[in-house]
Length: 479
Image (tube, rainbow, N blue to C red):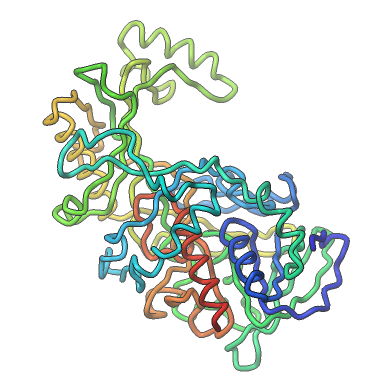
């Protein structure tokens, strides 16, 4: 059943499971739990299509490095799958091997705990399991950088593929325009009794269920928990001040440019740092893409003016003199892009702003920071790649000044991968959920999605999100 909560505001049924969020994690969990015979209520805060009114609830107060959080997620049915590029890569065994990263523990589970769910996860996002994950090219560099293996989903838009299935499923009641605003605990503060939801008309209802699962994303999961502070002053699940901490992204760093010696080489190369390189250098993982620029590109209202000046600069071979227009590469030049692992860092966090949204709920305060370990990862990956590229006889890399001078700040951008803010751990001292994604201290509250990532690796998070969601569904179906 599919209903608009702005019209149908009476919910008097008790459910086995209440799931908030209709992105890949929420929809995967709803389908799997319903298939095991459980009654499920699935909540979407937005509508069935994008709207400025709904998206406005995602505005944040940004006080650290700006990752443009209000523009990198979507608040309507299907969530971030509505603008996902489709690139997939699973975690490696080594992603789970580190006992600690920057003084925080790594994963409390290992590779074998999620690997059995890979085939089904691939089917969910329309990937052929028999083809696996392929490289663009052979390993042309060195023992330190292996050819990256990945796959591309069409991409699967969860609304387009699964809305009809959700609507037709007799075990699922799905309400949209239904924003989770609060949760009520029992007298012992050990169980969630109900979840309060509201709509844009300031109409509210309470949902009763045996268990509750938050699938709201890496910013909204901690924001919601911190706002649930009527019975627990610091918010639900936040007894050790870990909710919202260790926000991680994948770092997009403009490392420099390259020139091929042999122009018959592939126009795009993608490499992944090997485990030996990371262990020897004591750094995180890196995914590095080297690609030949096909044409000058500019964006925004002044793009025609920018294109004019860039074209002249490229013809005169003075592009390095006119970077004040914007950072760019001329056609034929090689551009280096990255997707670099960020380590868990307590000071990189989501907290609450004093500003409120249209329902009077405090907005998120976004404070994205990187640490010295991350800076070392960036510089070691860049230097290692430049050396390997040259030693392999492929050409020459010109590294940016900030790679060579540790006194310079490192500019970095985002990949819209919000991870780690309700991280998984063996102990509530270092995380928010246990190895089964259950919130510490609350017997019937679970969290799914990339906010539970203990570390983020250097791969797109969609595949492990779905694998972990399938694992959680299997666990809940047995308990």
